[in-house]
Length: 520
Image (cartoon, rainbow, N blue to C red; front, side, top):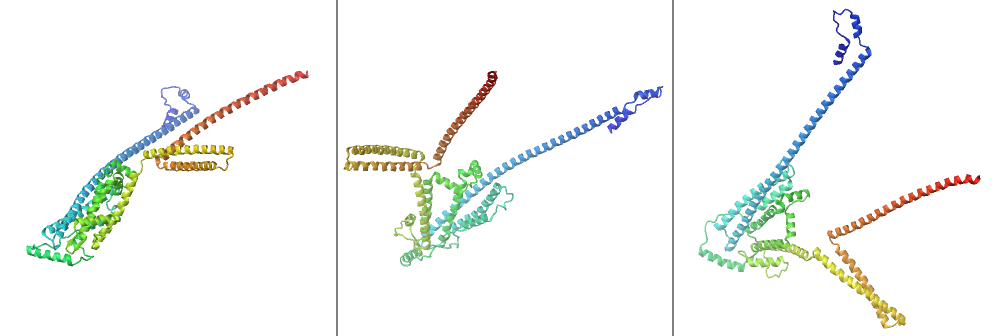
């Protein structure tokens, strides 16, 4: 539209009425058609150029806006991701602290229940009729209450543990983390924590002094007359021994209070290397650092638990258990797999405890042998010194054998000069000569074995690799120098070839000049 209007303004000029010679004026104001077309084309090109430039400017503005929006989205995404990571880390730390606190309470309740169970059974063992008293009934009631609280804490702990698992694996709902394996472990823990001696009936009255004397006399009679049955196990003992299974909480306590688990940097390293920082990993590190201390603590715990279990299971008569010292002696004899036979378990319960003690004793003895053998192994620098001393001794022996070979060879040569081929001295020197040769062969064989045994670990392999790399670098440098020398020789040969060609050309020119002179 602008170009058309411009054309109209150019072609149609206004004319006033008072001018006399209008034709002359019109002729003077007329423009040629070619100039008008050129002007119109120029104007159209300018309009197209302006349109294109406006379009390009609009496109650049839109691109800049899109870039700014994308940058803002990226920045907001980075900010959101950092906020999400910080939120997850803080939540993970809080859940880990909650799990540790709940497990500490569970461990305390578990130990409390075990101690109360032992006290209750010892009070019962001290009585002549194994009947309940008010004190034992109250102890069992306390054990029951602590067991109920412990079961509730087990569920509470696993709730936090599932939430921690969901946070670690970016799971939104906690039901996803409740797998069949985890559900089975929860049920197993509930079963272990629920077994305990139950208060059956409240004791109404106490025995009088005369009744106690009569019962003591019957007790002495029964202990001498009535033998104990193999299948006999008191109910409180049968329900009390499984309570030692609550000691698994001690393993979890060790895991939560370990420096390897509480340190966030070590946890991140474990996650990056796909290593689960669980009880097995922690106990391996402890055995690596303090093997003897860990074995002593483990053997002491097994000794105390096994001795009391043998006392509770094994009985002399229906109302009399063996003493704690006899049970300790029986456990030591069984644990060390000696078995003197002076004291033997009289019930199936005692025999099962003795079997478990013997199996644990075999495993502990194997661990002890491994620890002792590891302690007896020479360190790296001690092994270096020992191998150096052995190499020096073998080198001296090789020199002595070489000297003996030379001496015996000279003796044999001297005797051959004297023509004593069959003399005893010649035979002895010949035997010594071959013996020295065999000795050198044996020494070389020992040196090869010593060198092979010397390469036992990664540092030795690294040293060998370093030596080979230095040799390779030297050989490469020599090859490069040889290559440079060969290149210089090639250049010199090329120069010599060029000079020879130049001399040949000059000689040919001289010959060409000389030949016509000879003809003349």
